[in-house]
Amino acid sequence: MEKTTHHFHSVSRRELLLAGGAALLLPQWAVAGAQREETLSDDVASVMRSSVDNVNPARLVFSSAHEGERWLAAMSARLSRYVPDERERRRLLTHIQYETVRAGLDTQMVLGLIEVESAFRQYAISGVGARGLMQVMPFWQRYIGRSSHNLFDIRTNLRYGCTILRYYRDRENGNMTRALARYNGSLGQNKYPNAVYGAWRNRWQWG
Image (cartoon, rainbow, N blue to C red; front, side, top):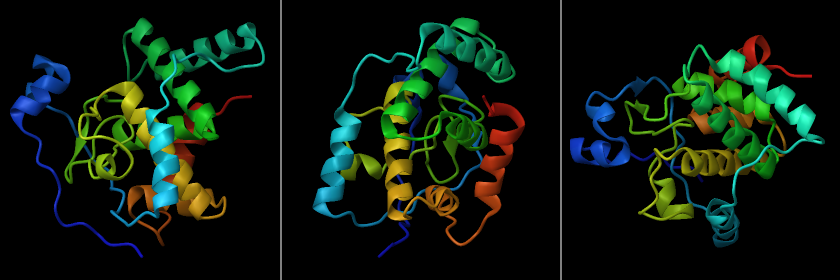
């Protein structure tokens, strides 16, 4: 049974500085929903924890190096509106593609989700405390991670976000619309899933 949490971790100035340096003195706030805190079975939590802890060097996962480079060049051009630096774009896209494939998710759809959640801002914080690119709620650290994990770190945030979205998709028997609504904390409403689908179709479709 789901339960909505009414207590969220506050984000101190010191914590923001530790997470990302002086650029975080004026953090950018994200306008997004939040996953609802719920009780996980021990088996589910264990599987999710293993996924979060499984850290390997990120790499593009394509049938050929040429196809991977073609995808990277195309996505980098599209991402330039959000991330000006080309080297950072390519690094970010490599992480996203690797983590989504590892989680069995559609990379292009997740690009749409990240656009809606944070506009690709690594240090985005929502009004209820969700953090980073995929707007992960800190309570997940208690269930599937560790208190030492930095949710503003790109790899960490993507591993959490993809693991959580995969969990919601499995829970909804493959119904991605309901999984996305759960991810946003708005199950029963289609506004958020439609926004993700819109970003996906308008800017991130591939192939």
